[in-house]
Length: 238
Image 1 (cartoon, one colour):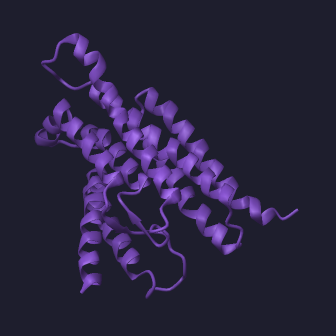
Image 2 (cartoon, helix red, strand yellow):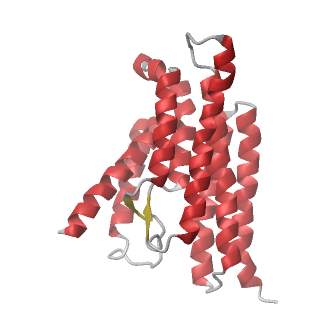
């Protein structure tokens, strides 16, 4: 039996396992642990394709498993987290409307599902992404309750407890997942600085953002990722 061919799929299933654990923590409003398990799942997701290419065992099964695992870790979890955040928002809505409103957070899950299904049949996304990858979107959403918890800024507190702001974030999240905007891939296919210069520069700058801004650095680096991709697209067109 060729053990190597099972290693990438095992890593993918571990990603799914992390997503399931994150769901439990998010359900119990332990957003910090949910965030860490999603991070671990994304870390595993980063390497399953790498090892599939390294061992030359890429398969249609692996592709489907990868999307199904991502659907939980980077699709259902952020939708549940936004649902939980919307429950706690101060509002002037009637009680009957407020019972329905938090479910709009799962628009993120719907957008993630559509993106993942489309990704599997979109032949343009072999070396880069079109639209925000679900892991990046998940990190953005899951960082918000942590920014709210650890930030001393009254401005951020006001924004992140406003139901309309969170609804706009939800809608923008679903849009960016499926927007026709080319974004560079963070996956390293070759151990070469020349081939991965953009990715390495981004990762170094991301580290600086995380060191100086901590949890707030996460949404900032996602925004920076989008802006850097847009600039890179314009440079490549010249």
